[in-house]
Image (cartoon, rainbow, N blue to C red; front, side):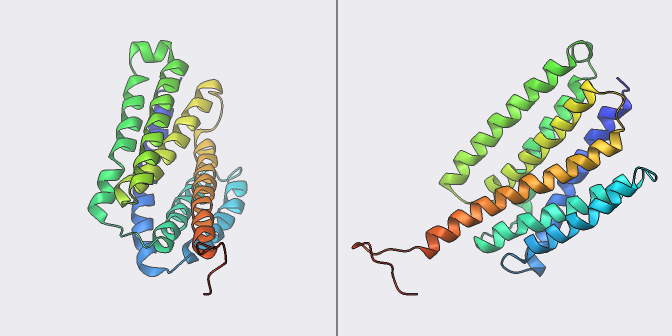
Length: 220
């Protein structure tokens, strides 16, 4: 495999994490309620024609990636706004460290002799570790809704998506790496948005359907 391709995916993945952090923090300060979701979906729709046009102008894949990364942050902001969770910047930075470590280690590992020989197996090992960390983050998230665990969860989900992009590249080395990165940004936006919508819908149902001890719905 061309050694530049894994590095390219790594750099874009780290960039995506940084944009997710910054755009989420900014979106929380300028939006209210679920409006970040609306803006995020709008940005994703804008990215679609750019991705299609990139067949002729490959650099547009980068613009598509950037727009989706910002859109992901906007969508994630709805979770913190609707749940009234404080977004402490320092905690958010600390929260993405596990995702950065996973991405860095897999990038280093596949450049070693063992990693070059057993590349698929090496990537699979890190995918399993990433999934285990996601489960651990969910457990802590259930216990406490602190931004440290919730944003750590979002960061690990994002890292997992780019690990999958790397896995696809291993199987199909002839693929254009920027195209796969752009596809990955769409996948990241869709998955993060679905997660946010799932969490919020459950919360709304619990908040909206309040029953008293006799089973009668309370007045609002």
